[in-house]
Length: 209
Length: 229
Image 1 (cartoon, one colour):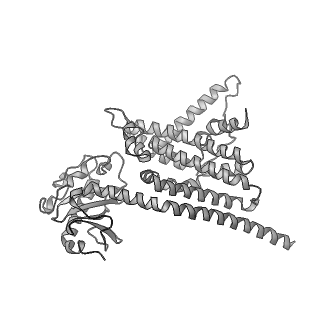
Image 2 (cartoon, one colour):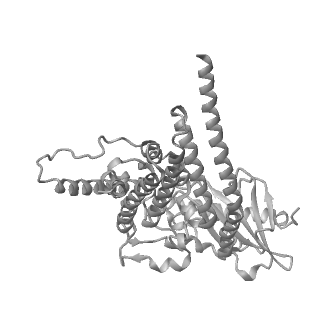
């Protein structure tokens, strides 16, 4: 009796193992052949994003490859090390692309990609991800509106510290009625990123490696 | 009706996943904010169902009853991962939109339900056909629901076609001029209301068909309504 149970159990186990092996092999194969296309399309998607905020004539290097890891910083709002990409012309620093997170949006974190020229002027800002209310706070997304382009050309010199706020708070930045919390958070995050840039300008453009 | 015709009729109308069996409500409600999203996820599901039915059916006699569920889940999970990797590699923007819902096809009970109730008892050809037709039935519901929500909510149709097929398809998007959208349709409540309308419409058609016979009560071909996760 116990022998038949044992026999049955081992047969069941072997069947399960066989299935696991076959499908693991299938997965390994598919993973292998899709690895290169996935990496390529991810790099392309990232590069397409960079191209929106750093114009072609601002760099002659490969921005994707020229990167430096930066430690978590309160001004950038991140808790983990992030990567900053640099744009250069003839090895002269032209711009840096920073990732920043605004924690005080209406719902959840707002992830931003901010390109700052070497002279401290903003080249462009894009929202990477957000959870703001659709149709209300989501105009910060380039797909929904041009609001985010307000930052183009802004700098700490052009707009004084107390003016880095939405118009409702006596600042310089426009917003849409009904959704003030979202732009307020974005303006603050961009402002802080600029401050971070000023304080760490030299290390940001240091040679990688 | 031939066997294959009956399977197709079952999948598309009589036991439609989206509006009759009400299985897999999670993606049905969450992803149908536009036609393209709905149809893409529907087609991915249809492909997984056809493939998993096709993979299980030939080996159904070798799978002991005790371990059939782990084996089925293993098969489904592997196939879903294959689809996920493929979409990620060749349609990156679409992958970004569908995101978490592709891996979630694994736990969509409709896939396991068809493997368990059909593929495990039938030869490969009808099994594949059944999985595919069930998936297409779901795709149609997702597409119609996505269309309703997109038109009412955003005033557009076929937006995001460029995500799946490349930028040249962008001009296929239709826009209602001077319509600024009714936000509710895009938000979660719109999904419930839209699905309710679809279910009501299907029941109405079904009841009109069976009018000659005076049984006007609850007409539910699938037996009982199973609650979905």
